[in-house]
Image (cartoon, rainbow, N blue to C red; front, side):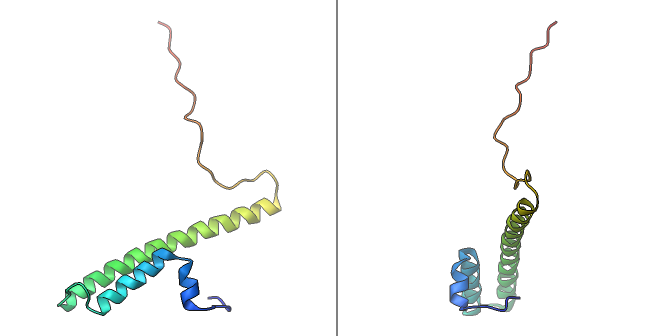
Length: 97
């Protein structure tokens, strides 16, 4: 983990999806939304953790991809980060009979 952690609230501002997931977990813990049974709360918490994990891992992967692209670009010219293809391709030609 990071040596220089800074303030938790400040760090959380960089990741709005993470903030909303943490708030959703807190809502479940505080029994907001009419949750009366432990199994309901458990199911909701598990689902929130799954979403949180998927979003956090995606954000991590995007950051790593950018980091590696910069690293490769500094090492060797002519290497570019992945980008979406702009062309639809070559149109098909009509075959003569």
